Amino acid sequence: MKGANAAAGLVLAALATGCADAPATRHAQVNQGGYSASFKQGYTEGCESAGAGFRRRDEGRYKTEADYMMGWNDGFSACRRR
Image 1: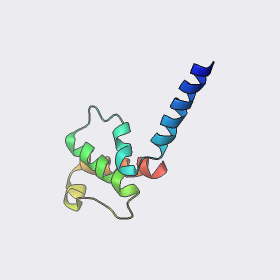
Image 2 (image 1 turned 120 degrees about the vertical axis):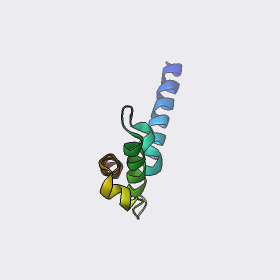
Image 3 (image 1 turned 30 degrees about the vertical axis):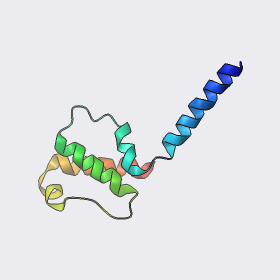
């Protein structure tokens, strides 16, 4: 039982550490496979903006690239809620 308790403690510590991540690193935990590079960059910048107190966003791309805009909005929303 002692080994099981130690393993459980390690799992809990890992989970607690994961919850303490800054918004800039949280996006790495989301599977973005199949999305365009534009979406991924928008998602990253949106997620970083969620906890930064300022918006990191390429306004030109946000207004003209649908994938970037959707990625930014998704990243901002997902990281703001955590």
